[in-house]
Image 1 (tube, rainbow, N blue to C red):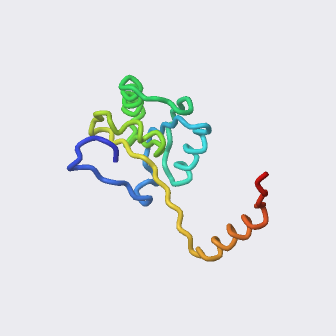
Image 2: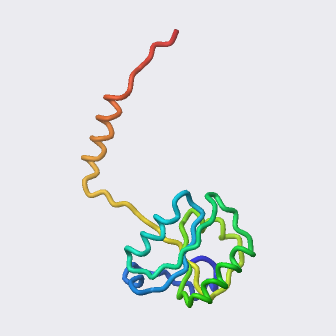
Image 3: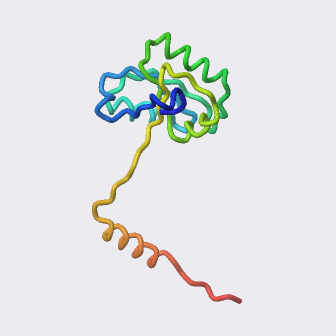
Length: 130
């Protein structure tokens, strides 16, 4: 959770998302991909797109929160890229604002490392200095 009352901040788990109505916003090259990810996780999404690399101000946040209230969204969700731009802002407790985080887990790390090493060997060349 971003902002709000730090003592009451809670994270959402993937199991909390199905059926959750959210206002999702993103200032990325393809925001619809982000909205579709949330839909695939079971969210009912109202999406709001911004320009890539958007610098948010309090007016933007106020409009987002107004839209969230109008749409009866239970939460506001953004990307990690956009969330870092909100960290210095004072944000309200309601509706809660979250960022979607993703992690990658490698089950066969040795095979992956071998694949990368082989690829580098095949596609690299040493050029003698003049």
